Image (cartoon, rainbow, N blue to C red):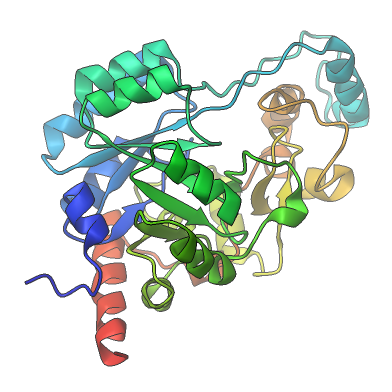
Length: 355
C-alpha cells in the first residue's frame, strides 16, 4: 500500500514519488530529467528555448535512459506583433550601458525568442508520446490540445489565481499546478497581467483545492521537506520544485547565477520584466535595480531580451536573468536523484509524524 496520504497524482501520472522536477528553460537538460525520473519523481523537459531538432535529440536521450513517465513543458504565448518603435525606444534606454561596456550600439539587435507550442511541437509529442505534457501561460488552441490528449498524455498547466485554475479545469487540464507568487522564473499568469492579482503559495493552494475537482500540484517556495509536508497539509496531491534543482550538478547555470544562488540574501529577489517582457522572479542585479524591476518600456514577451544580449556578452552578471524563487537560500548541494528522494522521504516522514 502506498504510504502517501493522497495518491491521486501518483495514480494519474504513473509515478512513484509526488515530486515534480520543475521545467526550467535554459537550466534543465536531459540529464536532470533522467535523474529525477529514475529517482521515482517526474522529470520535466522544458522546450521553450529549444529548436524542434534540439527537442527531438533531448527526448531521444531521455527515452534511451529511463522507462519512467516523463513530462515535456511548453510555453503557449501568442508571439507579439512587431513594434519597431518600442524596440528602438528600449534599445535607446540601454545605450549608456552599450557605451560603458564598449558594445556596438549600431549593430542589428539580436532576436530573443521563446518558441510557443505549435504544429511542429505537437508532431514531436505525437512521435515521442510523453506520458505528461505541461503548459505555461494557459493552454494551446483546442485543435492542438485535442491532438496532445489523443496521444494519451495527461495535461498540466500553471494557475496563479483561483480564476485561472477554474479556467484550466474547464478547458481540459487533468491536474493543475497552483503557482504561488514565491516561485522563481516566469509567472504562469494568463487571464490578467495585473501583478497585484498574484497570490502566495500558502494562500493559493487551499483555495484552488476548494475550487476544482482535479488534483492540485503546489509550486512556489517549496525547497525542502517542510514545504512538501505543508503542501500536502494544504490539500495538494504533489509538489513541483524548481529552484532547489538549480543547486544540483545536472543544472546548467552560468557562473554568476551559480554564485548568486549561494551568496544573495532571501530578500534579494524581485519579479521583473526587463529580461523577457513578461514578469519573472529572479535575484536582483544591476539592470533590474536601475531599470525596474518592472519597466513599462520593455518590449512585449519574448522580445525584451534581444537588446540585452550584447551587454550580457560583456558583463554577464549585471545583465543576465538569475531566476530563483524566494526560498532559494534553502538550497542544498545534492544530485538531482538524491534531492528528489530526500524531498519525498523526509517530507513523508514529517507528514506521518503530524496526522
